[in-house]
Picture 1 (cartoon, rainbow, N blue to C red):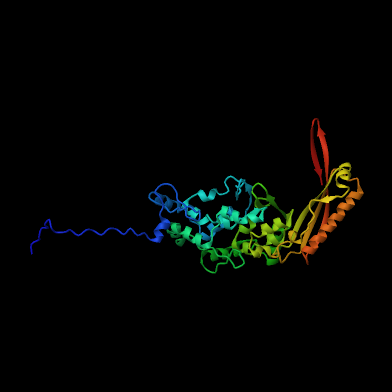
Picture 2: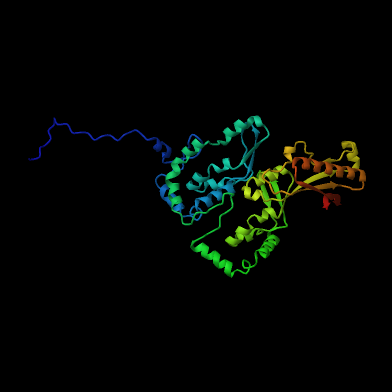
Length: 404
């Protein structure tokens, strides 16, 4: 049958119009070609578009993003978590800026890093306020998200974050239930390396008793100071040696034998129990449960006698007198804690008045009693240190020299 030409009266069927109904999932990943768009919960929509997809693909090959997800999560927690942010009223209610200029710089590295770590500063930090009645306003200012909002905000970035997570270059890092790194290998090349270390290493061929003595000598007997830094509003620990714990990273067997020794064989020094409780909270229970010794440094000041008698009616004062046992009670997770050392440091411009010094010593005994009541079953030792502050004058300039 020959083809028939269409006449003017014939109607040409129109092509169906594309459906204008958008799926709910499209609304999540859609954003303008230029500029940025936020979700209702406050997070940025960082789904790549156009040329950004190629850039995102290149970023996946970076050494950081090629690490296993477990290792990346640990890095995010160490960099962005464990801090204390202070909030106050300043014209309007809101969270205060950090003193560290680049505290959140990691979130601006690339899209995948932002998608994985945007929630970390809110979930792993502590917000401090002097006004408990303003807690609701602080939560609104910090835009803390509930689980539903977190799930919705990360849906748009799922397409380009999950691809590289599935295809790992390295084997999955395993942890024990108590939080310790699982370094045991029963098969594979790591098991072979561990066997070779046991046979070839002079240290690992020693009897277990001798190895324990070596490890205790290297990792124990130190006093680590834990300080609260007002500039960064964070609790940090300071060590004298940069490589004080380098022994733990030598090999798997040494790590398995020594991972808990730095916590069980050393003394941790703080100026207030609350600082230590905040610090130890950042570790797994396995580490906290082996701590055996904590030192609390308490300062006591004494002024010149003429000023002392006139202003303070001859009543020596300690830096603080604990009124609430909860303020001086160490964390209940310290199940192996054996001794609390109270270092009562007396600072004075002169030490010739024995009456005043006796009263200061009496104050130290009272403070020890407070700690014994708040931490029942734990031995509390009191040590006294004298610190003499002697004013010296050089020309028109004066300074103070402290002697211990």
